[in-house]
Image (tube, rainbow, N blue to C red; front, side):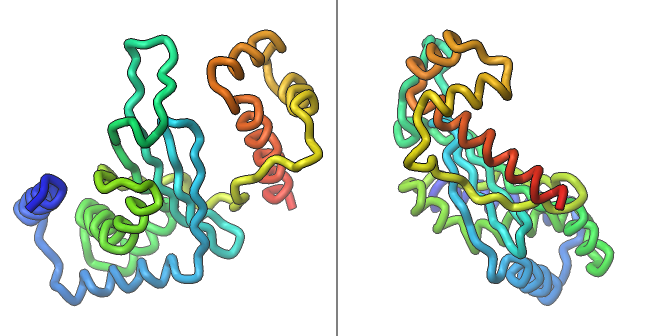
Length: 215
């Protein structure tokens, strides 16, 4: 048994000690509910920086689930230029809208802490291998489950830079919509190649999200 399986076994034993365990039929019901919740959803992968990668599941125009993965940053060096694959995995968080969790608790006779645990287990069983394969690793797992704001956010898939957009146009938009000064922005680009494009794409993505939310 590897370290990951040992950790999961210890967690199972600790949860069983603290909470009355529902019947296998109840666990199956919860797993089926979650399977239906993510059915026909689309998963998007997005690398924010070498130290962070997100996976987002969208369905019917809403973000229904998100995983945030963090990878080690060496704070002892001025500029850690290691690629994600060269960094140790630090932690992973699973997020589902709070109103979804409330809905489950209103219908299912289980304690919230145990439900949170089962959600983590369900995710590991259903998506754990897929996430590791996409990251070309075998050490990624979910450390904790969290509930984010009451309702699901509007889904705006990651964007690609239009071919006809120049770096100067990207810089102009960033300078108009942030507190960045040109020299600071260019310095960040030198330190972190791709910083200008990532910042630009985040700006137009946020604008698109605002437009959809106001419709």
